[in-house]
Image (cartoon, rainbow, N blue to C red; front, side):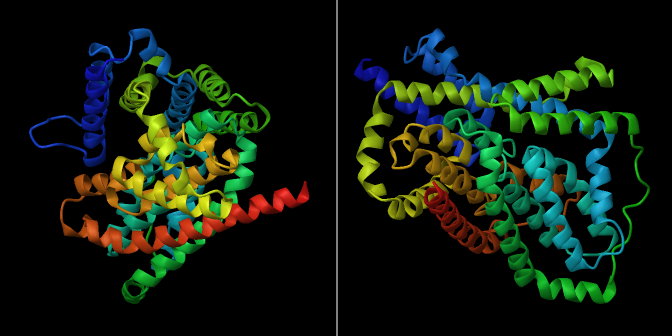
Length: 428
């Protein structure tokens, strides 16, 4: 590769990631998916990659896994599952503090079973509805929904896109990942509930004086019971398949195909609701990163940074966790995981460090508003549905909660993963 092509690859990568990190660049009217697609096209057009190299750079396993889960989510939504779950857990009879804790648990559990972005999209409006009817402050509940969705998604390989990537890169099975990461999610949920009560307890107690229990969510929309049963049966089969079969994408897409058949829904209508923009974003992102890797600069940088991580697990776990948290908030967690795939295998215990990468990149999403797509979905949905200050969460309001939550959860989770590792090693 010529020096000119190396320079072009670096420039394309830098501009693409600048748009991904900051959402937009002045005078450049591109969003994140658009920037990734343009960057991928330029990598080929400038000769950095051949068309065949670009095509082979796309991780088909991750794309198929995402597609399968998206189809299942679309049909579950059509059945009324998410609305029904929200009503059962967030319905009447709860105090403002009880509602907050219930929301955290509900969001975390659903985010472990489905994509956290989908959970946030489905729960934001029901949460806003009950908050508005009960005359409660919206901010604690919006922050609770976003942060708990991130935390819950750390438990499984299908909870968020970066975990899907890590499953593909590492070869860790669904069941093994769950055994390691479920304690991380549980501890982090407890920390989050305590932090939210600390920051908003006074406001919630004041609200309890005027709204001691929550009202209902109004008239329930119709539930397609037949589709709901079919969706839950197929979902249960998919979750069992994840545990007993190593090929997660095959299980997900087979489950999606089975549900399409038994539901008898028009396939075109279901596929029209799949988030193809996210799939295109992922595919393009793989190509952009491969273009940079083709220059040799990534391998060079990894070798130079290797001494920084230290030569023991006691050093590598905290340092790598800190680097991941910072980088995930600079360039977003999914792109950083793609970049880090060349670094993790060179660390002392790659399997453990893949888990550390998953933990830190996911929990890092609670540090700032741009740090997680799930957070952006919650706050943007709230802003569009209820314009005004009551549904607006500012950067610093989120950050004052997100900073301690992120620091405490990442620290405790790193210690927990280390303890699990040494316990497993001692039992061998």
